[in-house]
Length: 288
Ligand code: PAF
View (cartoon, rainbow, N blue to C red):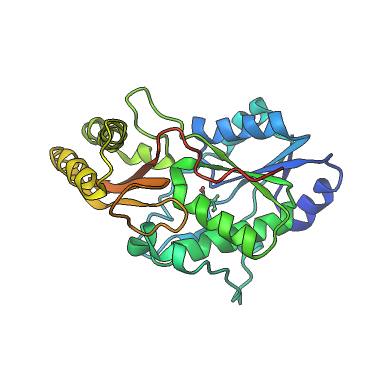
């Protein structure tokens, strides 16, 4: 496994890789969710590139950039064991020149859900992912469904800017009690950790109600909200049942829907989601 820290170094190594190249962009501090994406890439592609970069532009000034957990040595050991071929670990200066002023803005999709609370987040994500796609030139790129809105935003960017990259979405990897794996879970105190599976429980409730035939989105939102509010440590940021393509809120679940929520447990903000009908892929299948 080769480690490259600069863009020229990465490009020099990238040209030697056989196609198709799979790419897994990450912010490091890897957990089983990331490693599952790397395994998928290794299985489906001739070579796998992974990036470890805590992207400053997707954090607002009040967010956790400086405290974001990092452990490069452990990440590299995990990636080597998972079969990655090339790892890109740039620093912020490598990715953003002093006078950087070019941004990728995906418009309407980013104003909903996470965008209501984190208005500049997706501009940072879309910009860095487009930079990384230009640098790594993958044929396939792997993202986790836990960040469902991110997947939809990147899909739109890829389509609108004609990136020759096929997106692959990995299922959310969960702890045994249902909590979605996330680097931010490490911020939770033992008491908060016990409260955190309330997100998955509320999504289970939505799926159960849908399977019982409920199609009134407002009734499902209400029952989910009540369940979350029963957890004293949880504070709901938003709870949404939206069209899975446009992220517009819906009244009647008569099409593929994304149920998603963001919950603060203490100072930690957790997100999770489920697609209705249960088991439907988030992204529409495209002809090969
Ligand atoms: O999902 C993440 O870890 C980040 O948003 C990504 C895609 C690596 C961009 O910084």
